[in-house]
Length: 104
Figure: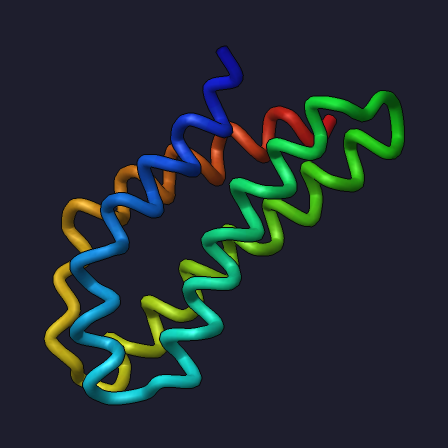
């Protein structure tokens, strides 16, 4: 089992309820958030079939996308939208930590 990949899928499941709130305010931010979250999982999945620097590159892309998810949630909060991230943030923080370790 690839733990980071499983956590990325958990993040997507935790994000799903928040997407409805964001969609009411900004469809472009919604699209970007969905694409970033999907990118994390998809790049991790692809990294499993790679080796060396190529594997590391996919993990780095996944990490960048995880930070993009974090940024999108921060933007929604800055706009004052009622986006409750209490369940999402611990999963996202764990994922970022896992990705940080895998990047080495």
